[in-house]
Amino acid sequence: MSGPDCTPWILTVDIGSSSVRAVVRDCNARVLGGRGIGKSLATLKAGDDGRAVFNPKEVLEACNRAIDTALDSLGVEASNIAGVAIDSFGSSLLAVDGSGAPVSDVLCYADTRGSAQAGSWRKTLDETHEHDRTGVRLHASYWPAQLAFLLGENRELRKARFWPVGTWLMRQWFGAGGEMASLSAMSWTGLLDRRTKTYDPVWMERLGLCPEQLPGLNDFAHARQGLWETFSKRWPSLARVPWFSPVIDGAAANVGGGAHQPGTLAVTLGTTCAMRVVARGEPLKLPLGLWQYQVDANRPLVGGALTEGGGVFDWACRLTGIQPGTALEDAIKDRRPGQGGLVLVPLLAGERAPGWNDAARGTLGGISLATTGMDVVLAAIEGVACRLARLFELMRPIVGENPKVTASGGLLASRAWQRALADAMGVAIHPCLEPEATGRGMALLALEALGVKMGWEPELGDVIEPNFERHLEYKELMQRQTGLEVKVNG
Image 1 (spheres, helix red, strand yellow):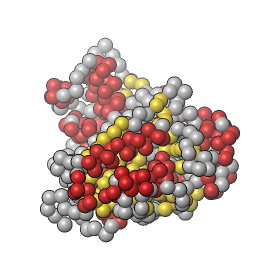
Image 2: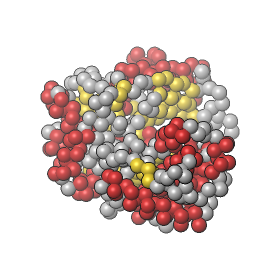
Image 3: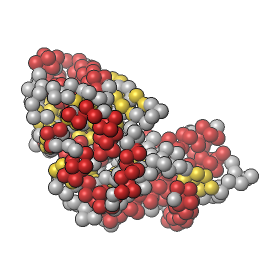
Image 4: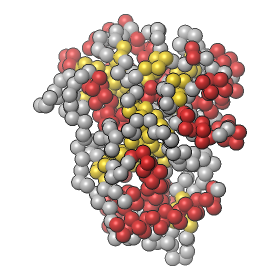
């Protein structure tokens, strides 16, 4: 199908950690011109004790307001919407009572109050075995540690049920009965056996849970229709269309960024970074530093996420007083990797992939009286690029030979970051020009479920080719970084 705003349309609802965006896309997953967009804020509440939570009712209201705005801007054209696709941050954990009412906040991946329990398990359990079975590490980001914390704090929660936020939202919109969660949402929790796609009996027994306390499992294409009366009146154009089972934003971003099938690796360069690929079937042995989630039942998603990224670059610029922009780009365009003599271990906010060590700390080596602010900023870029390249090496058994690599995210606007990524990884980089890969991915999955034929590939920019000599210099820098990291963090 082609043409401007071709139908059918898909309403995508993206529940992020800072806002909710409701966006209507056409049959090619393109945003409509100047309409069909709504945005509302949902406030993340963080505390010194490690909490990182949302009020579930605030998330619901933010979703409702965003959908209201998107539909109001369409008027009668809203009748072109043929489905609703939802994604949320991963993972999310909410305790509810027997009537489905919240009895806790929504814990997100950044909540670290389960760190002590995760650390204790690392000392007593065979983490290699645990990881290969569930696809995730023993870490505070996942449900086992978060549930252990919640149940330890409040024994009354032993009677509760535990849902991802998407399941609870669907309950509000459609009413009670058969609460389900997608394989995508639950694979992100660490409670699934990655091979059987069922709840892991080992963790169920350890945590003292029974299956009735968790949502039933389904796939993305499992849809609900027939909104509850209040919302049917509020959104008549959505009352009878399918609402697909909510998935996790990272899975949708991979699809929207062009990595919807094996052979294409997607890199996200933002405040933090991630690297993911749809694997060719279930990996027989999952490398310890990586995780395995699911896009859907037929698309295993293997990769890793870094705490480091643009946040490290911003820190270096603030520290030195150097402003990002054209002047900085011009000053460093001809510099070689490691030219300033510095090597940065950029773990300023703990470590996710590959070591998953919350206690890890960064360090800067090679400082001398000749060190300049520009050296520090360049070391920040190189330090993150080295960590991404090390993650790429870990993924090579999964991605296969000569994968196509796409990249997206705000840092890709910088030529310095483009060069650093290509040179450190030693592969050509295809910039994805889609500004909202997550929403595009949700629309593509929904269109596929509806049987609509569309183009999966996003618009790509000019290929960024690696420089072989600089790649060798990056390999040497990576060795120095690894050695320094071992000295500091063990």
